[in-house]
Image (cartoon, rainbow, N blue to C red; front, side, top):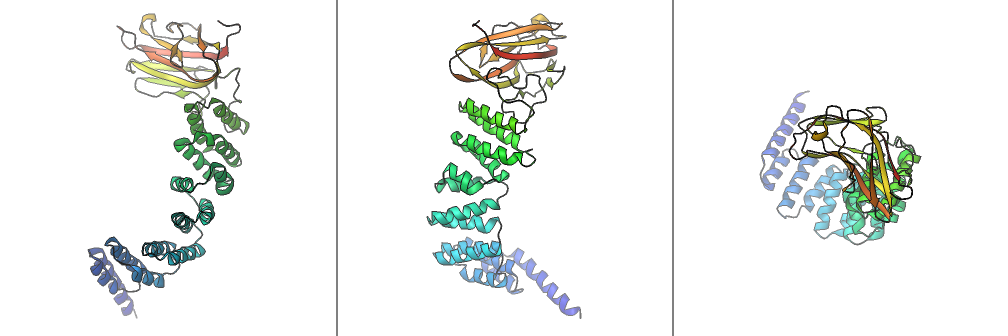
Length: 394
């Protein structure tokens, strides 16, 4: 009773070995002849013939006789038919695949087919259905929609709906490829969709949108997105406030991104500890830090045409007066506050004149080795940081 099974198993094993050794379509077809009912072997023959620019229609027909419900084989056979100029046959095969399989591949293949043939109404329908089953990187589908003339509003209303993953991918795409003008609406929709779930992935994605808006000079829109995240409790900070624009002045652990929060540097020779001391931050230096390094920074939105004052308390245990060049800059502007050096807690301030208009400026704390000095060792501690307009000017 087992003898026929052994014979069949041995024949299939031999056929498989022969197909892996084959180097030409003819040799591959001969190997498949040893086990003629294997669809995967026949598909390999079809692909081998196509690689040599030969007609593989007969081979694909045989593959579909053996496995008529495979979305992958149907899509490959449709592409082969399209290359032969059989457009109706290709469409029929793709629609057949979509009936048998309601996942990504048939829908994506149909969207591509209708785009290639300029049938944009059908393209929009199948692109929207493809988004329902989309996963991973959606960049190719976004680009195809762009090429087909799908407007940004239609992307939100017709294609993406309230699906948080699709909206998050769209926000990431716009942040990378633009236009940034479409980011606010997309990100607000994403925030609402993400807040209905866990919202864990939303913060870094929206912060990416905020950074893109800041780079493009859209500070007001960036602040509105930050406020939207605050209102939906995706971040542990209050809404952005134009009168007190510094975010996270207590140096709570920064959120991922960082969006409008502090960007905390990492590098050799120094470490930054938010929340130490309470309501502040500590930086330790080993003496091996870079000669010039930005330790922490925040993009701030300031109403210009006036002066702004940064106030803070600091101490620098172990760092002598002549050994340090620690100080604040706003938009690259020095404040003339002098070097930060004090063994005891000391009140410090820095004042800058800001040009008119709503300005997006980088507030940064820098360490730089003074000329003629070795790199300093010790600590810098900060607390009580605030940034406010100067009443009545300087």
